[in-house]
Image (cartoon, rainbow, N blue to C red):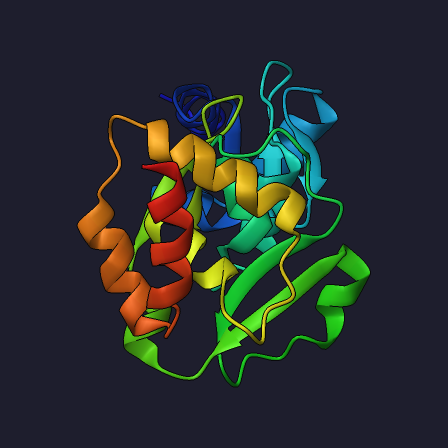
Length: 198
């Protein structure tokens, strides 16, 4: 198998996407990308990310690649998890405190920073995007609790319907929701919302 075939085979098995990081793992030189680009077999969509003719890399996947330490959260997570039908006007991502956020404004990202490492890492799951790519997002119980934090200015036109949808979800874990509520100091608010809906 030639290096060109190796790259195309990998890309086709990976929803039509290959990154320069993955190329390195395959032990293939970057010149192969240039050849495939010239042959119009691969197309650059962002620095370090290429797709085949049938490949598709959506905006959320591209942002995740650009900011790999960011976790989609808050209203953006509601949308990605199917708890809101509104496409986010501004993308909300959570980062560890100390992450440089200056260039994120150009990408329409509202960065939220967390100082405690265990809070940053807790509840990360993956959401599947059209085309089959995966992005990191916080689980719904964490998202609902975080949206009620006093220092976060949440869009309550999205929060209330999300709580209603959660209340009817067969997969909901109310105990987990209250664990997050305690962690973020919003137990009373969550109790009020869930008391009305359950």
